[in-house]
Each structure stands twice: as C-alpha cells, then as structure tokens.
Length: 491
Image 1 (spheres, rainbow, N blue to C red):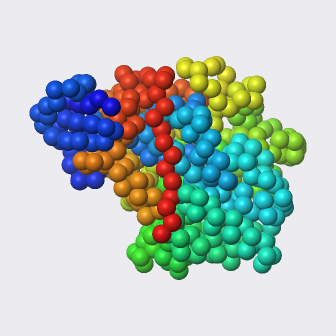
Image 2 (cartoon, helix red, strand yellow):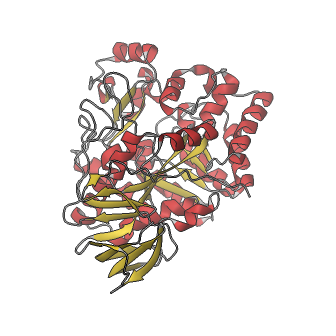
Image 3 (tube, helix red, strand yellow):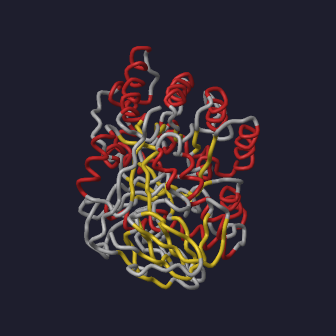
C-alpha cells in the first residue's frame, strides 16, 4: 500500500488533546507520523489546508448493515458503524455476510438479547437479519418472563455468541418492558463476568409509566454499580423525552458512585423503529403525549390517521419502519432539551441509523448515487454533520477537539476492554488505524430530512478507512470496500 500525506490541515487528536496545524503521514493503513513539514518521497500528497483533520467517527448504534446505508454514513464522516443496541444472532453469520458482500466502512455486532429470547420463548429462528427481526417486535411470546430453564437456555446462547466474537450484548429492554428485572440483572452479570459491555434500550421510566417494574435508567445504573460491568445507555434523548433533567442526574449520580455507565444521544426530535413496538400500542401513546398522527410510515410517507389505522398496521405489518415524533424541533424549549442531552458531560454521539427501503421492498444496492425513492430516517445520513453544525458552529457548545472526542474517541473507549482492536481507533497517535475524517469547518452541514432521508451531508471532504479513501473530494469512491469486521475477545 502506497503512502499518503495529508498536508497542512488543522489536526485535532482527542487522544492527546492536541489541536494544531500539522501534516499526517499514513503508511500501510496506519498513522506513521503527525507533525509540521513532514516529507516522504513516494507519498501521494493531498492538500487539506483550512480543513479539520480528525479520527473518523465511530457509531455505536447503527442498524444499516448494508452497502447503501454505510455509504450514507461514510458521507457523514463515519468510519466504523456498529450494530450494538439490538445486536444480531448468530454473529458468526452477520460477520461472514458483511465480509462476503464487502463494506465501505468497518462493522461489528453485539449478541442480540431479543433474538436469543425469541428463539427460546417463541421458537423464532434467528437469521442475523435486522430487517427480518423487526417483525419480532409485536410477538407477545418473546416479551414474557422466562422459566428458569428458558433463562438458562438463552443466557447460554448469549454466552456462546460472546465466545464467537460478539462485541457485547444488545438489550432491547424497552420492547419487552414488563419482564422480570431479575432477568436483566442476569444478563448484565453474565456480561460483566465476560468483560463485555451491554447496550440497553431501557424500559420505560417512571414518569412515563408509574407501574413499570423498575425505572429504566435506574435499572441500568444499578446493574453497572452492582456488577462492575460496562453499561451503555442508548439514545437517552428519545427514551427520556421531556424528563431529561432527572434521567441525566440519575446517570451522573451513578458515575459519581463509580459506575461505568456511558450514554449516547442523537440530534433529532423524532425516532424510528418497527411499528409493532410495545410502546407504540394505541393505549400507550398518551403516556408520552403522543397521538397516532405522531407516527409516519417510512416506506410510504403516510401519517397514521387514528387508533384504528394504527392497530391495523401493527397487526398486518408489525415490522414496518416508522418515524415517531417525540419532540417538536420547531419549539425552542424542545430544541433546548435535545441540546442538553448532547451537551451532557461525556455524552457520545450515536446515530441509531436505519436501513434504506425502496418501494419494491429492497434494502440495499451498489448503485451510487442511490436510486430514487429510497426512504430512511435522516439520522442515517446526517447525524454527525448535524451535530457538528449545531454544537460547534452555531451554538459554540463544543470545540472541534470536543466534537471529535464525543464522536470518535469516547465511543472507541467503550469497546477497548472487549476488543483490543479499538485501542487503535478514535485518535491519531502513531500506530493508530488511519480511519480519518477531513471536514470543512465552514461548510459542514446535514441535508437529510424526514421525507428525504438519503440526502447526503456536505462538508465531509475526505473519509479514509485503513488509509484508503472511501469518500474523496466530497463523493463516494465506488470501488472502495476496505471495511473490516471488529470482533470481541473473551478475557
């Protein structure tokens, strides 16, 4: 592999806390040197004067698992996209499939708690396919409590997945919100013993459901304290809604007590999921101040009309992807809540990116630009550029160094213990993987909208994975598939 020299950029390295004008020399897919006036006789020299050069973004929460989706994320500065909140099962199939098809950016998977429970409690064989797995969400069989034998069976399944290289355990607790808290504790105890993190979509908080078996955030914080494991709280903005003050205080208190609990957020007031999710049942919407019309079907852009329409779609197509509007992005009060979750100390940016769906039902393509008609949540294409635009340029709440720390460095550190390969990611130290994003600080912005979710971000000039351009001069490199699977290693 030939050498590459990025000349004259503003090099931001959250690993050392440095922010300076320098060159970056890349050899054999790694950072070989960083400093002013570097020379290399055989290197390809790319002038990045006036641009910000930093480690590529590491997305802990992406459901795209496709070439099309990963290209949208690459155009947003992402160099590693990980399926960790939901996870997949079996991970061996997930890794093999991605490697066979090729990926423009790095990938990895946690073991799916939901799929493991569904195999044991409802006999649904898992096929390592997130899109197929969405149809599971409305199946009541997997949402019930487990017998002692069933609990042993699916815990054993998860333990085997960790041995096969899963990056932890993804727990969709919010999709089975009435299950016995002892089961959640058992999963986290298993993960802590194995030295693997858990990634939780928490069950409902007490403000939303006073009858919940336990407040979701309190539950996550408690297991982190009790078992000493790494617990990651997914999309705190969407699970907390307008109760973000209390939820963040719960997390802060747990951290002060020594708990290894991390948290993520994305900069949108609407989420996306399968319409069969338990919390989208018509009788539960009012708890969150929602109505059926707060829900929009991704494939058609159709807004749910009323409770009868919602019941019909949930019954006939429970896996249908939908957008759920939980905050009003035009309301300054709600916008402040979004900014609060992003500004929370050490909060990580993660997208919760969703696959692209075309009218014929297909979810992937090698065509670029993408064929017309593809639908997805705008966070797939715009999470990172939107965060940079809002938090750095417009609001001044982050420096560029802090932005790369939250988008690159901190997410990588969540996985250091389970996967030593991450020690080379999220920073620009000598020997680090040359996963790099080059950003135009004056132009970077998102363009994706809720009804045109595949519009690519602007101002992400270059993206390299292992020293190979996947985005060059603001566009996809069509034959670049340098992405590699990142796997866990049991202690």
